[in-house]
Length: 259
Image (cartoon, rainbow, N blue to C red):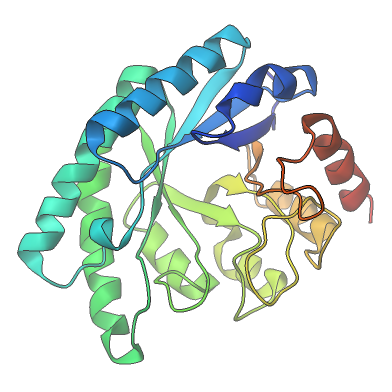
């Protein structure tokens, strides 16, 4: 496996494309668990993992499910404890599949400004509990847009101290530049979600379609000692409403980082 292999995030509607991703040069996979009853998301994970193995790929990470009902910044202590217990089931599922990394959202939204400090504290407590449950699996908290907890480099760097590190989603920054984010948090990044956007809202476009400064991110991550995969989390092609052609992704990335 390459030092920084290419990775792809797949969900219940895209894991069937894994043979095509393998032929396109991807080596590792993230399985994104849907917000469904646990037995249903377990079935999705097992089917996706079978596809990972059949394609000759390696499972790198499992993205824990997210929804307001699974918000780890919940302020009600009893509800938050129940959410941590629920997500611990997914951690054990990921462990059984051999995942190395877990990705978690620090909150749902909307979150009023007056609750922000309390939600940061609640999120930090949840991250510590989830990392304790994860043991040697690395838990990465993802930066998020809009009113979510973890929307800036400063916030996510603080949260990342309560788990193994940070998942850098480069199309979620709406309040600061990528340069500012990386100055504050690059040394805590242990996995990525790569896609492009217009700077107005998250879009999950193909690299080069938007405003992401790809060369700055590539150079900055390597300078910070990043050894994880360059893992893409893409939406549908706005022109076709279908997943981007697997063979188009890595060439678009290489062209974008060339500057």
